[in-house]
Image (cartoon, rainbow, N blue to C red):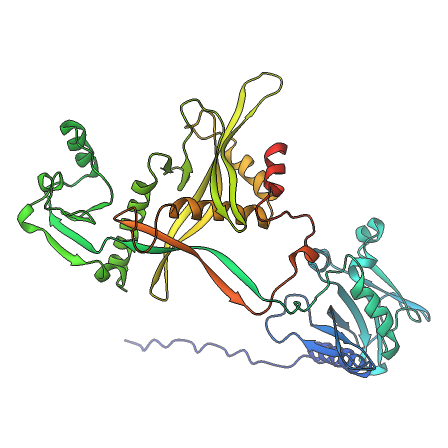
Length: 451
């Protein structure tokens, strides 16, 4: 039999192209000019998706950084510029690159250059294309005298970076700040986990047994591979009727809570989540269809509020409300405060991650067919203070009446939201005036009225 030989794959050798060299020469020219004016050039050293670097302006006399940063996209050529004349030239932006430059919050400079003649010209993209007609044309017209980038351009660059819509970069003022996360610490859980053999194979059989005997089966429990795993002592009723009492073993919960094995870790998360369902029921119920926990309405279906501990003391939040159609007088929707909760372990400590959300129903139970639209709208209207208040409300509600010494729930108790002290901070009032006080009605109240 003739020998079969595989073809050797061809090797594509890397090479340095002329355009790559010209592009780098253009960037080098920009750097030389920036350094000559006494400012800083910071090249993009990671992945570049449309910005070659940034200019950080410094006071020419003192060298102190001014906190003004301008992003730069360089375009270099060796030959003539587009539509070049003795006094001007043009550059046609592609739609994707122009969209990218316009969408951010920082000023972007487009610099076109001819390195071999030390020529460079610039415009501030957002300022230039503020005119809709220019934006539609995508064409930049440079004046060789007015738009020349040189050491003398400092004043114009400073003005471009300091305009009200430029997206200033400012160093944080010297202040300390406490950052509060949406991670609520699990302060206590059941100390023992019980495992026993059972002949039951489907969870429905457990609920059928409970209904038939008129007993209340409490979570948490897992039915898995002929075994029941629970925080409950399976040697006691009603569990002793559901499993082989002689097969019951109990273990320290740390064998699950500290486990790295994925199955045991998942089992522990299941027990915590099941405990959370039992802890919140019946005032707050788990909605499998939306994978979240939500407030149930009262029997009268009227809006109601709860008090909670906010950042500045006791606050009140409406957690169930409705909207009535002004023409028909009929209820358009009911809105339930809700949260998506998942248990996470960080540095050996368990937390409940609280992601606030809402459920819209047509009758307090059935989800509205417009759930997605309603949720999208209120999420657009809410600002950071609104979300923060929502998280604080749930954290307060979950932890009420509990502490590390005497937890009210034997299987699951919560502590405080994870917070971090930092020695730098941002003056929120200076950045986002009008976003609302952490404990007042805020944008959320407006969003409720406008929906």
